[in-house]
Image 1 (spheres, rainbow, N blue to C red):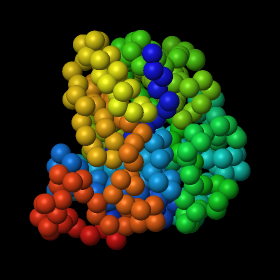
Image 2 (cartoon, rainbow, N blue to C red):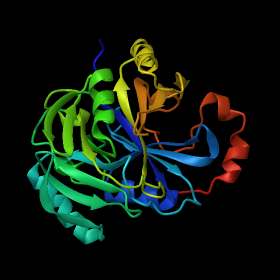
Image 3 (cartoon, one colour):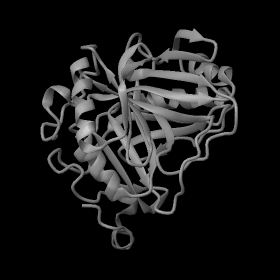
Image 4 (cartoon, helix red, strand yellow):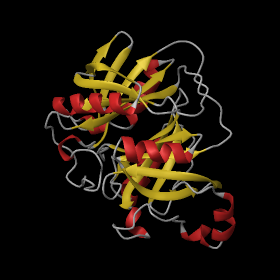
Length: 313
């Protein structure tokens, strides 16, 4: 059986790409590694932020939907994103930075057994900076040296992701029986799962909460993508999803990676995505994120697509 080596990316909804672009580059100091469009609806931007090359496990991605309303929080949703920083001192640095830049945040506390600092972006997306405390991260994560954040405190990549559901055991079975995550702690209404023992870059916190399902809007999380190495592994997981009776998209060619999508019994949308070929498939490392990149099947519509998009730089 193949093993899930961690998170791949996580995708959210933004109402305003310009504001989103400023926050994730200027406040969080991430690199915009790809400016493209939603391949299923090319009228909207799809922005990717991450490390030097947008390595799997570092990517925060956003679909721009200008007419979207506010998020009505509830259950059966992906509810928080953890981002790893190097040290406790880094959390102190970020708290001061958030105060200076007027970012909504809390006090330094703990989350899932790690030192933590809760904060929100300009649209209410809930995130947590987590002290990685010198723990191992994937060897291919590569820092972006032009970040405006002090080198020793830069965001490393994705950490613990929180999912809130109405029926805990339904998603427990998806994570453990099908995907091979290991349950590491359990309380009455919460459990923590890891794909790689002891590592936050493949960790999921699952919480049980009754009530209405979340109504998605600006600042809501659309789906979590988990990593596989290549097409052979993706085909294996496609069979596992099918054998468990889940309806899936089948393998979809996203040009920068191959993936498939499915919803679990609580309606949580998961994507399984390959590591490659990556964002340098149509760009040099130096030019990543600077121009509007389109997959080959959309290139012939470039003029039409560009005419509908509002400049964000």
